[in-house]
Amino acid sequence: MSYDYHRPRSLAEALDIAAATPGARFVAGGTDLMVQIHKRAAAPAALISLRHVAELGGIDNGARLRIGSSVTLTELQAEPAVAAGYPALIDSMRPFGSRQIRNMATLGGNLCNASPGADAAPPLLVYDAVVELRDRAGAREMALEEFFVGPGETALAPGEVMTAILLPPRAGDVRSVYLRKARVKMDVATVSVAALVEMEEGSCVRARLAAGAVAPVPKRLRDTEGLLVGSPLDDATIARVSTAAADEISPITDVRSTADYRRHLTGVLLRRALERLRAAPGEGVL
Amino acid sequence: MREEVAFRLNGHDVAVEVDVHRTLLDVLRDVLGEMGTKEGCGEGECGACTVLVDDAAVVSCLYPVCEADGTSVTTVEGLFEPGGELSPVQTAYLEFGGTQCGFCTPGMIMASVALLAENPDPSEEEIRYALTGNLCRCTGYVQIVESVRAAAELMMERPA
Ligand SMILES: Cc1cc2nc3c(=O)[nH]c(=O)nc-3n(C[C@H](O)[C@H](O)[C@H](O)COP(=O)(O)OP(=O)(O)OC[C@H]3O[C@@H](n4cnc5c(N)ncnc54)[C@H](O)[C@@H]3O)c2cc1C
Ligand code: FES
Ligand code: FES
Image (cartoon, rainbow over all chains, first blue to last red):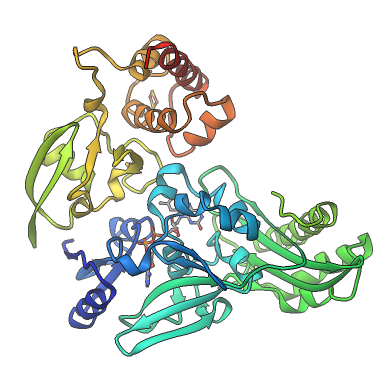
């Protein structure tokens, strides 16, 4: 297969090329798309590289933490503002692929590829991440939860680019963690979970739970997380939560695992995650 | 669509006209004749094709050649010392049994070089983590880890 390759320097140029080029795809790190092309699962007429688009790089610690969509996972791992405020996101980078993959892969690419098991998704869901999208008509913001539509499907319109991932500031006794289980190193997650709790006087006042690889999209577990609010993180609450999650997910059987095992594992990982949050006030732990 | 791509390869300037859809791996081997870099899987999983682009280890099988334009690329052929001697990492792999059939070796060595540049004194755990993306079907990894440790010692002994 053969395709054209464009290297725009600005966002405006990238959007113009996309509008003028039927069958073109954006490429960031290429660690998903180049594999799909190699396997003939994708056959783009042209690739529009986002690596040199200045507006998509960099991390900006303002009122919200703004992570450019083309920030690589290696850059993310080295960013003190991420480590300090969003430890579950850092947890999710540690087992991610390999050093070579993290040097190339971008945060935006991980979300836009929309794999149900994308490692960055559950942590970003529990942090209430918002994504910024832009096309030639203008920019819009959307909750990450709304962005995922199905396996490999997102809310991106044709020719639209994800420009940034925005994270609200963190305050109070907020604790968060990400856990994933895979068969071997370098394999994508069989199941992953992220958990966040905000504690006040021994009781949970805000909770977020999300899981990966157990539904068509990385999924926020809204019903299950509701069981935590107003309760202490005691054994009875944790047991109730880890059982309830099974009703909110719809795992499939595939080469990595059976649906039943995924359902079981989701409960186990949630229990472990909440036990760790109980033990570690004010900090995320792996 | 063809384009000229120009970069530094192992310290020398190269410029080649290429089909833009080719990967850096393809161009290194088939156009530039640098056969040190290997193709194992072609899908980013095995690390045999690891090279350094501006000192960062990448899998060249997934690296669009156009993205090499304006960069500095280092392959295993670029590791020789000025007098033509093997570099410490190469020497250590030979001495400590870090290579058997040799197919994974160039990629393994490039990933090791990148690790030691960043962390001159890595622990066994750090070495294993840094080499997660490099598969070897022969050695069982123990000698590879020993080779990287030995290379670290050699490099730390050398006057800077
Ligand atoms: C060996 C290997 C191991 C891996 N391990 C993991 C793992 O452990 N966990 C995991 O989650 N993933 C893993 N992956 C998958 C992949 O590395 C990640 O999903 C990565 O984050 C993708 O980012 P990228 O920049 O390389 O995306 P690309 O391949 O460049 O793009 C992915 C998709 O998103 C679109 N896109 C990219 N950026 C934008 C944007 N800004 N706006 C609009 N569309 C965009 C592209 O058109 C394409 O469809 C692995 C891949 C490989 C090859
Ligand atoms: S050939 Fe590139 S990673 Fe296997
Ligand atoms: S030495 Fe044979 S694959 Fe590593």
